[in-house]
Image 1 (cartoon, one colour):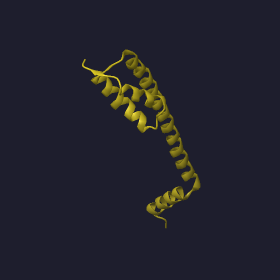
Image 2 (cartoon, helix red, strand yellow; image 1 turned 45 degrees about the vertical axis):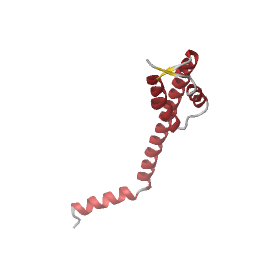
Image 3 (cartoon, helix red, strand yellow; image 1 turned 60 degrees about the vertical axis):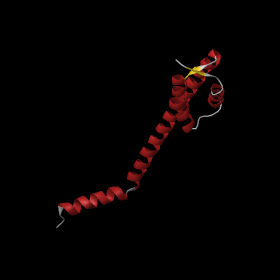
Image 4 (spheres, helix red, strand yellow; image 1 turned 90 degrees about the horizontal axis):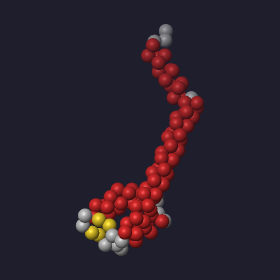
Length: 104
């Protein structure tokens, strides 16, 4: 006589042993990774736009305040750089580091 526990273990074993189950798991993981990658690209693009736009304004003005610098550098540029961003935004940050920092 087959007990309910034996039946449950057999079903669970069959599910975990099936290639369809693992194919589904693989698909879901890859889909999540693609979505994560797309979101990172979008964030990197938005940060690049803000760094270049705001940075150009500070360069045009000829100075930056301490708060503006901290916001631009710590909260935009550093995360942007960690996401793999470089190029124009890095050049702008180097130029911003050369302009004077003024009090509010």
